[in-house]
Length: 124
Image 1 (cartoon, one colour):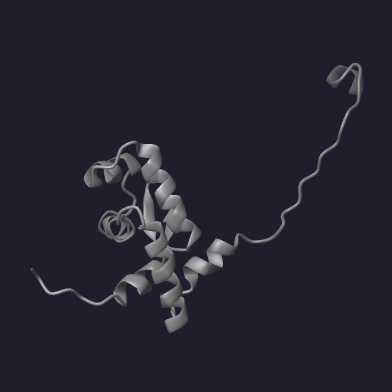
Image 2 (cartoon, helix red, strand yellow):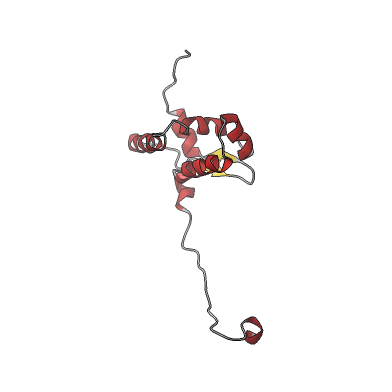
């Protein structure tokens, strides 16, 4: 059988083992934010927004349209190319704020808690 797989040369065996749970799973479930958690998220989102604000608009859009195709969401924001939008949502996922679905995204409990704690701006 080995001769059929690799008739000459060296055959290497590679094994994989689960290193542990994805830390983002616990992070996105953490919906009780301390003042330090909130300050950390504020700072991280501000860094992501340094070349133009997009983080809160993206979170609010996902909140309003869960499980919506990424292409539809990107179009609603006028974002091109689509891959840039998807990369930005992955950045939010890394902060524990979004969850990827089979189609589209949804906010994590952490994101809901964060958004619920933001000050309400008066209507202009």
